[in-house]
Image (tube, rainbow, N blue to C red; front, side, top):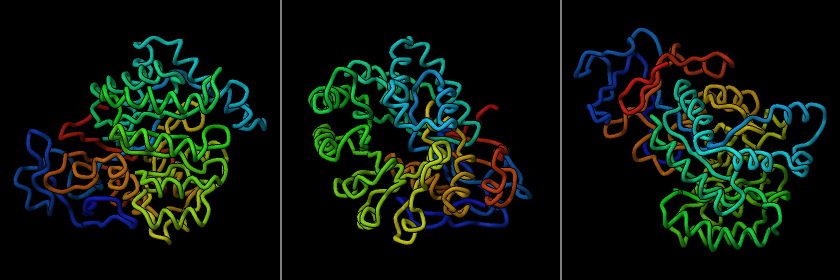
Length: 394
């Protein structure tokens, strides 16, 4: 079985091919054949037609790598009833990760992040986003973007870098002062140095406002960088509608997205990027997934891999959580973890489906039905991950 969807984000489930599919690629990693296994131009070297499920490599369009250090004690505190907002306001959360990042050397950050990238690859992630946001100063955010570029150059996977220019208000600055610095210094410099492929904003009552989003969207457009938005995670701020109006590539989280937000997304090209692992770990309100699906909004699923609210890097686990928390059917989850997030990252012309001309990013699963992936949470279903035609070592 393999997906046979076309380019661009899709609101529906992946198409399937039963009876044995073969995929062949050139030495440069580009697919030259995808069709019946008995028509393969070369003898198969990976997999068998009798067993397994071949799908495009998973694309994780929302992660917070690079970072350094975990925050398991904050997880325990939340289980005792301390809220995420309380931890954030008490110099925990984002601020704690920023202190750890500032105190670590470049080598320490890279050494912490590299094994996580490899773990992602062994669980089928063949392309992903790397995001800044733990810098909380112009210099440290540029450093984070530079380290993300280094990781991208080293990684087997295709990686794009997002500048999370507004994640939290730095100590000693007002919100307005930081937004001004982000718009006049950080974003223009990241654009000039080609350190970022997109710009992101966290809109929340503990972070930034829609007015801040609008200012940063203008600065991003001036730097020729597309927009991403953390929207309506902890409350309904109307950010989903603002993201759609501003032409953002995605509105992410959406736990408290209103009916008006759903309608705005449905009338736009903005993808709804849902993060079920963070909803699970925060015991949060689920996003209105049924309303989004009924309205025809394309959905992406991502890990939100970060040390505080989603210490998850496995996309099969994300798919299982999406089934349990959001009731996303298996084949819709497949579309939501391949072609749709590839569109969010601007990679849909190269990745996300199995078809000639695209990169041979593939995942061989052990069972013939993709439904086995969400059906067995905690079980690793990946037999082999292939990135650009090269087998990822276990």
